[in-house]
Length: 111
Image 1 (tube, rainbow, N blue to C red):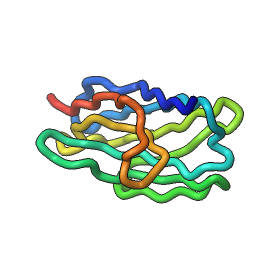
Image 2 (image 1 turned 60 degrees about the horizontal axis):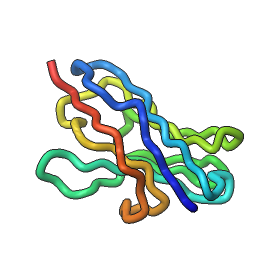
Image 3 (image 1 turned 180 degrees about the vertical axis):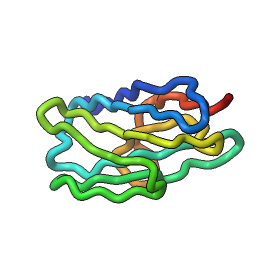
């Protein structure tokens, strides 16, 4: 059974950093593309970052870095210089549109 469980969100001040994690089970990250998507208040799902099975990454926000640990089957999103507009629920997903995603973790950037 495929399962994705995100963690690491919270309340952070503008300019701060957070590292999100996504524990995957039921499949292996080493053979799948993986994605982070987010949904801000009153907005639709938005692609944030992706990483290939070989580890090639791409991000929409250049302050963010996506990475993974194949041995731990865990996906990460390192977020730095956070801004209020980064406030959203963040999901790891198995597709670009976020239709196959976990329950998410809330990130709130506020002073």
